[in-house]
Image 1 (cartoon, rainbow, N blue to C red):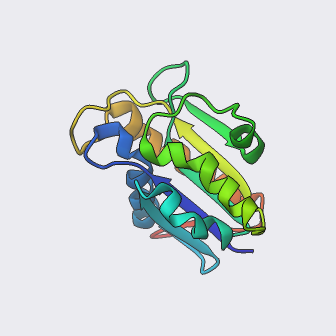
Image 2 (cartoon, helix red, strand yellow):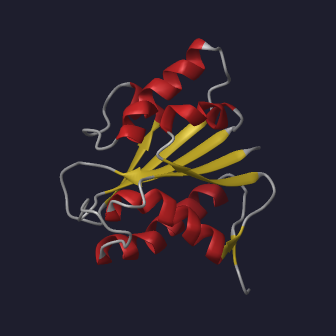
Length: 161
């Protein structure tokens, strides 16, 4: 099984860069098996739809605009995204998510099992540092991703153990 862990975000808009910070966090703290690709998607959006087509399982990490407090984490599946149950989109790379999945369907590409972990940002102001709630969210989302992969029989081992 090929797994893609895809972090989206804009590193110069503080919490908007969460997905990219998350990818860096995983790379720094976990040993990743060969069948798992950890990918910094930045703001590429639809430009990298092929990545989703190459995987059997996709785990997407990004910020999301929904009711709650900064640092609250939500889980969505492919159906939530395609049926537009996902909250209001916040940024250019999110605008492309539904379109990217539709493009893959139009190409008759295999449909990857998709899970989206979205976290509510505190700030989208210019800056390169995450707010305290999102900094703490790195560890929380990592735990969710580790559990998600464990349910598939895939182990992400913490480095140094």
